Length: 269
Ligand code: DGL
Image 1: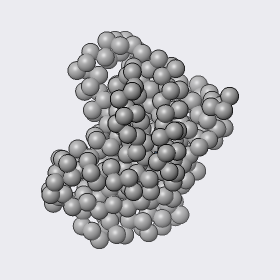
Image 2: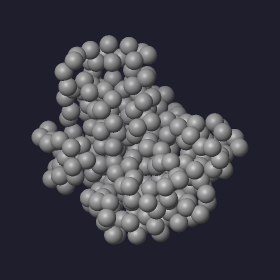
Image 3: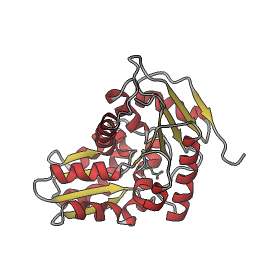
């Protein structure tokens, strides 16, 4: 057993879609979450900048003595080079591999859609990974840059007209490409999965990166005897790099519980 917390980070709120799944699957684990709300979005930035931000996020979590790090961010998972991951003193999980493996297992037609931020899609990392697992796969990608600001601003209600129109605009090409699975390659997207599902049609199975990653994380912790050994509910600490108020309201709605322990961090200091 290992009673240290699990460290999770994202550019903002999206990684909470993974925290939600983690809490459901591993309720006694302690979690330290960092949302880089002062620098969101990551997905429109250069690879160099994303790597620098990710390095700082990871170093921050390591200061909290975490036993593993989850990059709850499709963009970081797609862009962070293996050389960065290899230098880490604790196991590291991104979301790309788990989601891509799940898509390859689920597809019947071999036609797989991937949506994500511009940086994640343009990196080609999802495409490369899927082709390695399923060489005959036909992959259809679409960056959806407006989804992250819509979610960060709380426009996630299923009948929200702006988000529905945006989804219809971005996802029309995916709908006509006749895919049977669609990877939500950015962790913000499960928060609007109902809207995305309406836009692509009922025959397309959505792959939630968070759900698949947590299945793999739980398996890894169990196999390596790293699960927390207590029966009680784990503690959660949340850190953000911008105003707490902007984060707490939406975070509470997403996690379905009151959050009192949010702290602001300042990397500049
Ligand atoms: N949740 C992040 C991801 O999965 C959002 C990226 C962004 O900040 O643009 O890619």
